[in-house]
Image 1 (cartoon, rainbow, N blue to C red):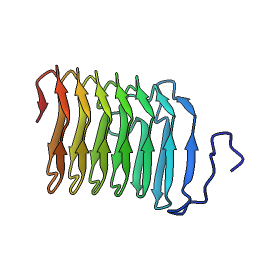
Image 2 (cartoon, rainbow, N blue to C red):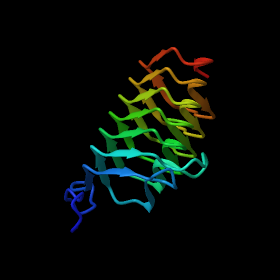
Image 3 (cartoon, rainbow, N blue to C red):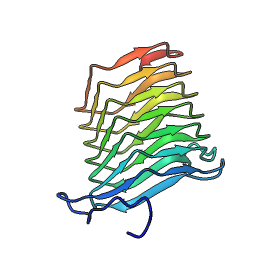
Length: 178
């Protein structure tokens, strides 16, 4: 609570923790910011995460593992040597109004993460995929802009009962949606 980036809250649904207005440059080593094993509601907003390390399965601008009940909004994840945003085994999260661009791997890499809402995001100019989702059942991917990614715009594998609607795909390397 004494940190300059702590914006208040007590970790309840009516008053979630708030993390805001931070910029983290990992200097090409490891993950910029990581949250693990949390069910406490929180909001991450208006932050910048840049220059993570280059291990695509481990490093990201922002990483959540086994995290539920968050709102990730109005953040920028760019120029990371790994992924922009890595989401693993996490549910009931809202990832809205973010920009994930110019990352060396994927803008968004989500796996084994159910019932998440990805809306109004920009996935742009990532070297691998704009967004890659595997085993992300019951999720929503709506009103996102997915363009200029070198390989694929959005790639989904086993995302049963998920809604993909009103997204814009343009000028992706192989396909917009795969």
